[in-house]
Amino acid sequence: MSKVLIYDHPLIQHKLSILRDERTGTKQFRELINEIAMLMCYEATRDLELEDVKVKTPMEIMTAKKISGRKLAFVPILRAGLGMVDGVLSLIPTAKVGHIGMYRDPDTHEPVDYYCKLPADIPERDVIVLDPMLATGGSAIDAVSRIKEFGPKNIKFMCIIAAPEGVEAFTTAHPDVELYCAALDRQLNDHAYILPGLGDAGDRIFGTK
Image (cartoon, rainbow, N blue to C red; front, side, top):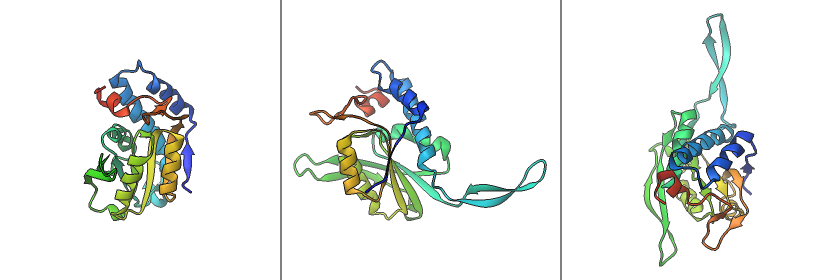
Protein backbone atom coordinates (compact mmCIF):
# COMPACT_ATOMS: atom_id res chain seq x y z
CA MET A 1 0.00 0.00 0.00
CA SER A 2 1.31 3.46 -0.92
CA LYS A 3 2.18 5.95 1.76
CA VAL A 4 -0.44 8.72 1.49
CA LEU A 5 0.25 12.07 3.13
CA ILE A 6 -2.58 14.61 3.43
CA TYR A 7 -1.30 18.06 4.41
CA ASP A 8 -2.84 19.96 7.31
CA HIS A 9 -0.47 22.94 7.44
CA PRO A 10 -2.35 26.20 8.13
CA LEU A 11 -0.63 28.08 5.28
CA ILE A 12 -1.64 25.44 2.76
CA GLN A 13 -5.21 25.28 4.06
CA HIS A 14 -5.51 29.09 3.91
CA LYS A 15 -4.23 29.25 0.34
CA LEU A 16 -6.50 26.35 -0.68
CA SER A 17 -9.56 28.28 0.47
CA ILE A 18 -8.69 31.16 -1.86
CA LEU A 19 -7.75 28.75 -4.66
CA ARG A 20 -11.17 27.08 -4.53
CA ASP A 21 -13.14 30.35 -4.64
CA GLU A 22 -14.78 30.85 -8.03
CA ARG A 23 -14.05 34.58 -7.76
CA THR A 24 -10.28 34.00 -7.75
CA GLY A 25 -8.88 35.24 -11.08
CA THR A 26 -6.33 33.57 -13.34
CA LYS A 27 -3.31 35.54 -12.11
CA GLN A 28 -3.95 34.87 -8.44
CA PHE A 29 -4.96 31.27 -9.11
CA ARG A 30 -1.67 30.65 -10.93
CA GLU A 31 0.32 32.22 -8.10
CA LEU A 32 -1.48 30.15 -5.48
CA ILE A 33 -0.86 26.90 -7.37
CA ASN A 34 2.86 27.68 -7.36
CA GLU A 35 2.90 28.70 -3.70
CA ILE A 36 1.07 25.54 -2.58
CA ALA A 37 3.34 23.36 -4.73
CA MET A 38 6.38 24.98 -3.12
CA LEU A 39 5.06 24.34 0.39
CA MET A 40 4.20 20.74 -0.49
CA CYS A 41 7.63 20.15 -1.99
CA TYR A 42 9.19 21.02 1.36
CA GLU A 43 7.61 17.92 2.93
CA ALA A 44 7.92 15.67 -0.13
CA THR A 45 11.71 16.10 -0.05
CA ARG A 46 12.10 15.48 3.69
CA ASP A 47 13.86 12.16 3.08
CA LEU A 48 16.71 13.62 1.01
CA GLU A 49 19.99 12.32 2.36
CA LEU A 50 22.58 14.74 3.76
CA GLU A 51 26.35 14.64 3.99
CA ASP A 52 28.87 16.59 6.06
CA VAL A 53 30.85 19.39 4.43
CA LYS A 54 33.41 21.82 5.80
CA VAL A 55 32.37 25.48 5.64
CA LYS A 56 34.48 28.48 6.57
CA THR A 57 32.26 31.12 8.13
CA PRO A 58 33.54 34.65 8.85
CA MET A 59 34.27 33.33 12.35
CA GLU A 60 35.64 29.78 11.99
CA ILE A 61 35.58 26.48 10.09
CA MET A 62 32.57 24.30 10.86
CA THR A 63 30.92 21.07 9.75
CA ALA A 64 27.66 21.76 7.95
CA LYS A 65 25.15 19.69 5.95
CA LYS A 66 24.30 19.56 2.27
CA ILE A 67 22.21 17.26 0.11
CA SER A 68 24.22 14.17 -0.66
CA GLY A 69 24.42 14.21 -4.45
CA ARG A 70 20.82 13.08 -4.91
CA LYS A 71 19.50 13.96 -8.33
CA LEU A 72 15.88 15.03 -8.74
CA ALA A 73 13.54 15.45 -11.69
CA PHE A 74 10.07 16.97 -11.74
CA VAL A 75 7.64 15.63 -14.34
CA PRO A 76 4.39 17.60 -14.76
CA ILE A 77 1.47 15.90 -16.47
CA LEU A 78 0.39 18.21 -19.28
CA ARG A 79 -1.17 20.58 -19.18
CA ALA A 80 -2.27 21.48 -15.67
CA GLY A 81 0.87 20.06 -14.06
CA LEU A 82 2.84 22.89 -15.65
CA GLY A 83 1.25 25.24 -13.13
CA MET A 84 3.18 23.59 -10.29
CA VAL A 85 6.65 23.63 -11.87
CA ASP A 86 7.83 27.13 -10.95
CA GLY A 87 6.88 26.56 -7.32
CA VAL A 88 8.94 23.39 -6.90
CA LEU A 89 11.86 24.78 -8.91
CA SER A 90 12.02 27.78 -6.59
CA LEU A 91 13.06 25.31 -3.86
CA ILE A 92 15.24 23.04 -6.01
CA PRO A 93 16.43 25.07 -9.02
CA THR A 94 19.01 22.43 -10.02
CA ALA A 95 16.37 19.75 -10.64
CA LYS A 96 15.68 18.73 -14.22
CA VAL A 97 12.19 18.86 -15.69
CA GLY A 98 10.56 16.28 -17.93
CA HIS A 99 7.09 16.43 -19.47
CA ILE A 100 4.43 13.83 -20.13
CA GLY A 101 1.09 14.21 -21.88
CA MET A 102 -1.56 11.47 -21.73
CA TYR A 103 -5.02 10.85 -23.16
CA ARG A 104 -7.31 7.84 -23.49
CA ASP A 105 -8.21 6.57 -26.94
CA PRO A 106 -12.00 7.03 -27.27
CA ASP A 107 -12.38 3.69 -29.07
CA THR A 108 -9.96 1.38 -27.28
CA HIS A 109 -9.94 3.27 -23.95
CA GLU A 110 -6.23 2.50 -23.78
CA PRO A 111 -3.79 5.17 -22.56
CA VAL A 112 -1.86 6.99 -25.26
CA ASP A 113 1.02 9.29 -24.43
CA TYR A 114 1.07 12.03 -27.03
CA TYR A 115 4.23 13.50 -25.55
CA CYS A 116 6.93 12.10 -23.30
CA LYS A 117 10.28 13.82 -22.88
CA LEU A 118 12.34 12.89 -19.83
CA PRO A 119 15.91 13.72 -18.82
CA ALA A 120 18.42 11.39 -20.48
CA ASP A 121 19.82 10.38 -17.09
CA ILE A 122 16.41 9.52 -15.59
CA PRO A 123 17.67 6.14 -14.25
CA GLU A 124 19.95 8.15 -11.94
CA ARG A 125 17.18 10.38 -10.64
CA ASP A 126 14.34 10.43 -8.15
CA VAL A 127 11.17 11.65 -9.87
CA ILE A 128 8.30 13.71 -8.46
CA VAL A 129 5.27 13.68 -10.78
CA LEU A 130 3.09 16.81 -10.63
CA ASP A 131 -0.61 17.25 -11.34
CA PRO A 132 -2.99 19.57 -9.44
CA MET A 133 -5.95 17.17 -9.49
CA LEU A 134 -6.23 13.44 -8.80
CA ALA A 135 -9.79 12.65 -9.84
CA THR A 136 -10.34 9.13 -11.24
CA GLY A 137 -6.61 8.52 -11.08
CA GLY A 138 -6.46 7.36 -14.70
CA SER A 139 -3.97 9.89 -16.05
CA ALA A 140 -1.78 9.66 -12.97
CA ILE A 141 -1.69 5.87 -13.10
CA ASP A 142 -0.84 5.85 -16.80
CA ALA A 143 1.79 8.57 -16.47
CA VAL A 144 3.58 6.82 -13.61
CA SER A 145 3.45 3.50 -15.50
CA ARG A 146 5.07 5.17 -18.51
CA ILE A 147 7.77 6.82 -16.40
CA LYS A 148 8.55 3.50 -14.71
CA GLU A 149 9.54 2.12 -18.12
CA PHE A 150 12.57 4.43 -18.00
CA GLY A 151 13.75 3.01 -14.69
CA PRO A 152 14.07 5.99 -12.32
CA LYS A 153 15.43 5.36 -8.84
CA ASN A 154 12.18 6.34 -7.14
CA ILE A 155 8.85 8.01 -7.97
CA LYS A 156 6.56 10.18 -5.87
CA PHE A 157 3.27 11.75 -6.94
CA MET A 158 2.23 15.20 -5.77
CA CYS A 159 -1.25 16.67 -6.29
CA ILE A 160 -3.13 19.54 -4.70
CA ILE A 161 -6.66 18.09 -4.51
CA ALA A 162 -7.59 14.40 -4.63
CA ALA A 163 -10.83 12.42 -4.66
CA PRO A 164 -11.11 9.21 -2.60
CA GLU A 165 -11.81 7.26 -5.79
CA GLY A 166 -8.57 8.48 -7.35
CA VAL A 167 -6.51 7.78 -4.24
CA GLU A 168 -7.85 4.23 -4.06
CA ALA A 169 -7.21 3.55 -7.75
CA PHE A 170 -3.73 5.07 -7.69
CA THR A 171 -2.52 3.33 -4.54
CA THR A 172 -3.84 0.01 -5.85
CA ALA A 173 -2.06 0.43 -9.18
CA HIS A 174 1.19 1.81 -7.72
CA PRO A 175 1.60 0.64 -4.11
CA ASP A 176 5.30 1.56 -4.29
CA VAL A 177 4.70 5.25 -5.08
CA GLU A 178 4.26 7.76 -2.25
CA LEU A 179 1.28 10.08 -2.72
CA TYR A 180 1.21 13.66 -1.43
CA CYS A 181 -2.09 15.62 -1.39
CA ALA A 182 -2.88 19.08 -0.06
CA ALA A 183 -6.54 18.09 0.40
CA LEU A 184 -8.70 14.97 0.16
CA ASP A 185 -12.16 15.98 -1.04
CA ARG A 186 -15.52 14.25 -0.73
CA GLN A 187 -16.19 12.49 -4.04
CA LEU A 188 -16.44 12.64 -7.83
CA ASN A 189 -19.60 13.77 -9.59
CA ASP A 190 -21.15 12.06 -12.63
CA HIS A 191 -18.70 13.85 -14.93
CA ALA A 192 -15.65 12.80 -12.87
CA TYR A 193 -15.10 16.28 -11.43
CA ILE A 194 -13.97 16.46 -7.82
CA LEU A 195 -16.50 17.76 -5.25
CA PRO A 196 -16.22 20.32 -3.76
CA GLY A 197 -13.02 20.71 -5.81
CA LEU A 198 -12.10 23.88 -7.66
CA GLY A 199 -13.34 23.26 -11.21
CA ASP A 200 -11.00 22.57 -14.12
CA ALA A 201 -7.48 23.35 -12.90
CA GLY A 202 -6.03 23.66 -16.40
CA ASP A 203 -8.69 26.14 -17.49
CA ARG A 204 -8.22 28.23 -14.37
CA ILE A 205 -4.42 28.21 -14.61
CA PHE A 206 -4.32 29.20 -18.28
CA GLY A 207 -7.51 31.27 -18.46
CA THR A 208 -9.19 29.07 -21.05
CA LYS A 209 -12.53 28.38 -19.37
